[in-house]
Length: 152
Image (cartoon, rainbow, N blue to C red):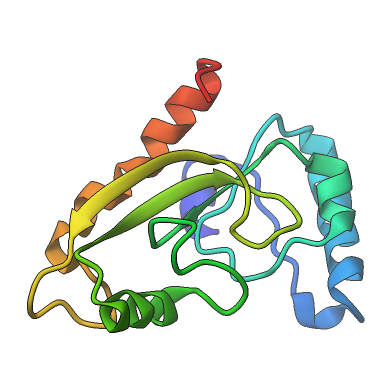
């Protein structure tokens, strides 16, 4: 919020705990976004499952980034260290990030782009690819470029 203010970007915070249900929260979120008329919604670190209420308003225009190579290690409950633990427990030789379209199926939308990094001895459950994470971070800007150019 502070960074948005520094750059003159309008922002608003909604506390999901103030709403009776996920659907009520998503309806409030849709109402808050309506004046901006977004062409594209980019989720990153958004730790809530999108409901049909939000998808009805913005379906086909929502992107997300997931810290694994979907379809492996995706779905409900697969976020943050849970994903990384699953990667390590599976003995995967590589991990990465997937930018995908958001659908009603958690982490089930079409893949736009994947960035791969090797899993090396010593990687922790906090982030396979640790110092190599920078390569994964490039996935989102490249995916956005492709979407904006109509290549995704």
